[in-house]
Length: 395
Image 1 (cartoon, rainbow, N blue to C red):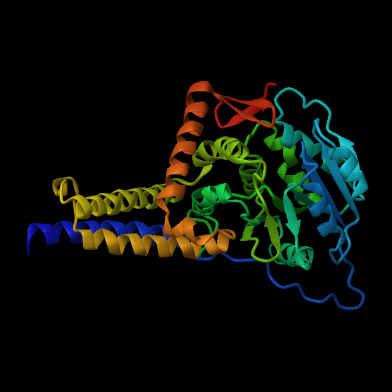
Image 2 (spheres, rainbow, N blue to C red):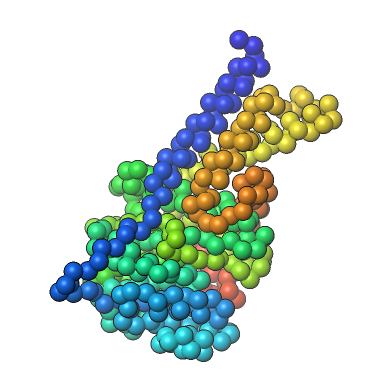
């Protein structure tokens, strides 16, 4: 066996191993269960919807219309206006919601945690459904959420299907996949390590008021930037289950429609802090997967340049055939995950080095702000990271 063939074999084994390890993390991208029709005499729990909102006049109408169309009907919809600088409050009232001003968060609270806490305190339903303002429920979504909660209890969490509209939004591809993988919530056997706290997805959370109180509610996670992950950990400490699903056709969202700057700011806030909260084994598998994608992108591009120019062959480890096959395999696996994560276009996976580069740049920015500056900007506020993975808004 020649040295070149041995190199190809070793590289192929490493790439296949990384892909298989990561695939285990997304082997069970389950959606909400179908809801059984209630039988005569069934007493349905009342549902209160809480929407924390800051500058959400553009997104609220679609959410409020979708909630109004749900069966069973919700008891109330409370929009917590978190010092919005636009017409959020007026739009919410026009959509039939009750508006509660959040006021200034007390010292040590993030704005979103305080808004969720304020909204929960101002509702009366047996169940609390916390929704981000850019989320939309398709017909039957609430019934599916209730069915999942009846079966699993505790905290039901859904990562909405990402509706991708404009070309720049395709650059969210790797962020969406990494969020699913690093959560460790979608292996065939559940969490990667059952002893570690589970993860949750903040855009859509359903819980009973009783369990919310047992876990400490948002007061228990008042200083955490990633309040969803921290809330899941609080439920875990209280001995309560956390069950996750992807949105599929039931729960959708369109993140960062305000332009590339909003996309960069949003993922900057989330990605580095999220890496610190993930289980080590899930983090390692995700890092190995991302590293394999970098290797394939570089190997394929260099092989193409060598083929076109006839120079630089010594710079490439592995044969052009290896990198061509690896490129196709990586693109197809990415396509499989992206189709379950959102409505990403063909070029997001065919030209995967482009969104991969976007991921690298935003992750580097997030890491620099997290480690060096110790704060990240978001919606006109600086979110301090001086306390480690917890933070408070300082402006």
